[in-house]
Length: 171
Image (cartoon, rainbow, N blue to C red):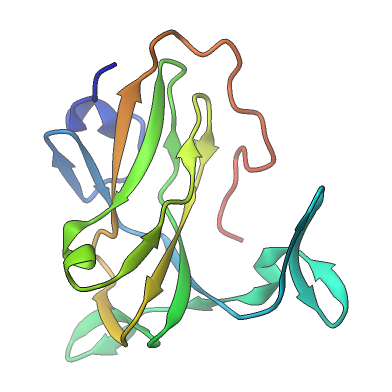
């Protein structure tokens, strides 16, 4: 197995902010605050329990839009907030698997990224990642939050991803 060069990875991404030696930096296309509700994961029932009904998780999110902060566009995020970001469209080749890692600047400042989503071979869409901010945060709207890397599969995938999230887009 081998890690792809950033230049190779960039060919499969709609938009990158920086090409690194071993991956690309991605800026979110949307940021959502996850509103606290009981979580249900029971068989095919998945979502948030809102007023006694299991609702899609999208029903418990509010989009955070960039605001002007001293002449710069930024996201202002609450302390102890949990946020989902949506990434630019990616397409994972059948010979690779994708992984997103938090930018080291986030980790150094105590931001916690859930290790959400292995991007399976054949996945296409605007994937999501989840972050927890222990303190209030001001993040530039053009800041990359993650680095996407591709790792070669030992053999070409026999079956490509065709699950629920194929082709997902920000709603």
